[in-house]
Length: 168
Image (spheres, rainbow, N blue to C red):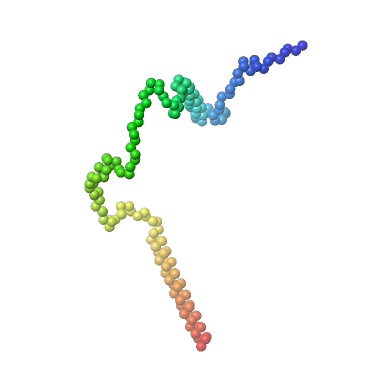
């Protein structure tokens, strides 16, 4: 006869599942700068999580020692409740200290003397390469355009003369 199967309840409590750690970066990095960087990042993450855990424990301990009080409850635990002084309603008038500053006659701000604008600019113009050649090309293009205009005008005049001769 086979052995009886053990109960699940006992084993579940006795054996704790092993938690796998977390990974940062690729697992197969060669030794070097990148691996050290990844290890440093992992150490920092672990350190920060430990600090957060410790802070959470401290916070829980503080809250357990001093339960939060409701704002709406009245406390008579031997504490003196200070009566607040009546607050002054806001007005449109400026504060007295500000009014004193405004009432003082302030001297007119002196404007610095304006410098003459006729002085040569401090920054020299940037040298343009081939500026003379470009200017000559512009002049040549202008002359060509004028020549073409004159030719068109002369051609029109000839056409008009021919038209007059043919029509008469």
